[in-house]
Image (cartoon, rainbow, N blue to C red):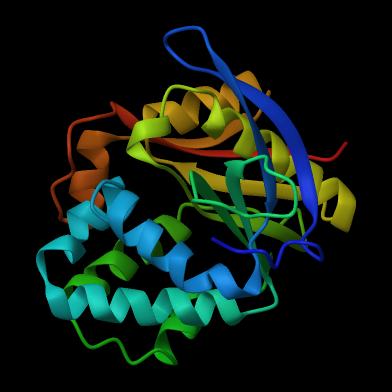
Amino acid sequence: MSENCVSCKTWTRFEAKQKDGSGFKLRMQDLPVDRKDDAIDFLINNYMNEEAFQVAAGIHKSEDAIQEYRSLLKNMFEDPKTSVVLCCVDEPNVVGNILGLSIMGLEESTEKLKDFIEGLDLKTEEMKRLFHILIVLEDYTDAKEFKTYYGGRGIAVHRDYRGLGLANEFVRVRKIICIEHKIPMTCAWMTAIGTQKAAEKNNWKTLLEISLEKMEIITGFSFIKKVSSFKLMFTTID
């Protein structure tokens, strides 16, 4: 638990309803500096082994790949262009257990993932497979209309707190952050039914949709059969 939350911006407060009808108050706020390791552990336990692209890459099956993934997350969290928002119980002056995370990265339309990867010197085949998927998708993406935008890096919710509206609130907060920072657009590949529904509920538009079958053809990998398609979805501040 962290008490270093005074300087962290709180984006929203809301109430979630449990299955028995009881409610509890939650808040969305920036990740405190001293909780970065906790956030990395959270992603490894609640995202890496479930998110479609990362499962297809097989990262969760290799300890070496997990450690390389952990190192990559650490570097990403150190990058000032990265926005990390956590959800926790809304207790005064305390950041308790992480219930969910939303990550975005500030991007320029001129930046290319291939150039970024060349500087990484990836070691494990599993991490190379993940970035192969992302590079293939980059060729299908056209965000050139926006010089600067926030690209999605993932939304993860703790297994015990799914179905309570956290994904919906994370999606809503992403637009609030764009408005606050005067960033015209945010987009993300929505690879789960929960995030796809949350984006639709918040009036995000679908820029591109790729069926599961086509994704397997263009990447050469097999994907878990939890969705019929993957959607690149976006919203603007206008």
